[in-house]
Length: 121
Image (cartoon, rainbow, N blue to C red):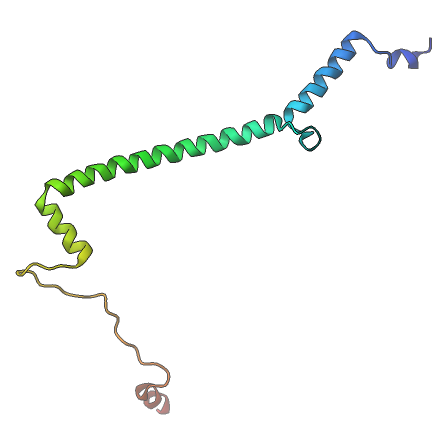
């Protein structure tokens, strides 16, 4: 037998190695389009998505606890109720003064007489 033929001879070790290699490729999801098995790539993607969703659930649960505490505070405290009514609805007590600084000062446009007079100088 020539040295070339002994190199390509199938031995039990090579057979198991090739089966293990093929099995590993199938697990990675490289052949996803042909075999339909998503493998480890899909598992990793879904694990990441699961952890993100669990973080979001924990965040929403914390918001629920905070809102529940605020609800109890609003139901029990008349001072808190008055403050929120004034803040949200804009109500004012009789002994309060309100200064409205939110209105913008009108600026003269390019067609106004003041701008035209300034440009003539």
